[in-house]
Image (cartoon, rainbow, N blue to C red; front, side, top):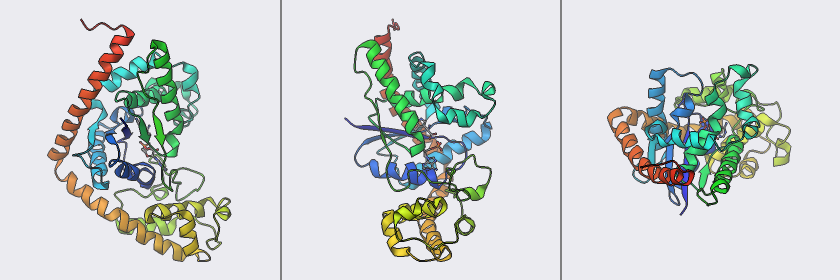
Length: 332
Ligand code: AMP
Ligand code: TRP
């Protein structure tokens, strides 16, 4: 059986990178797989959080999943902290993970910055908890953006190490699904940096909750170069900002980058940006409206999360019992 698990951190608003790199693919995959989608609030607290904001962001992210087209009837939607098995398996897996593996993780190095000794143990162990999220459900496939590839490889290594330690294929090795034209959306201000929640400039990203005027303004202000759009993809290789805008357009319009170029070759960015605003607003405005509607009924969102946590909890309990038995943890 094929099962999907994926999650996003409820840290602040979702942006276009989250949508094109991950969420949009989830919507397409729910027809072929059994899907479990989580708001990974325990990952969010690896850096300081405000309790009120965390509560709000957790509901917002679940609303965003549904507004983008994830069906709460077919998919399991919940907050990670609602199933205690994530923390428990996280601990067990940390006892099977050599420090050397964690020392290779580039995201920790980026997030911890220069003062690594001040970074929390949770931030360091973040990828082990992520492995636990996936393995707790014996998920076979994990749709994510390109930046999570290294964490996924670690999850596979941990699953393999656990299986070998107890001589049983307990966990399937989870496959990353990195899909679509825009697996790594870059900042609108700097084509060498990824679009991210943590960038201090709001002009670097398009948030899922931006209104049409804000989207238009951000795209108009997006960095480009003075050349018109080229005719061939290879010519974008040395033009990161142009490449990013073409990629975003293609992904939003549901076509390949080559198709986008063939339509806009030779045109100035001023004209291309008008078309980009149009397709961005057409895609994002309905999602935004639906998100706001859903957030008007917090009771219903909480019910969806409670039901999701119950369904997830049943699968988790069964798999954890198997893990306990293998390790020799008594359940008298
Ligand atoms: P996060 O916001 O870090 O929890 O990421 C949630 C999902 O969005 C993950 O699958 C990421 O790989 C994906 N993602 C985040 N930023 C980007 C980006 N700039 N481009 C493509 N995918 C992204
Ligand atoms: N680390 C992921 C991110 O920052 C979020 C995440 C946590 C996740 N657990 C996961 C993604 C399990 C996929 C599967 O984007």
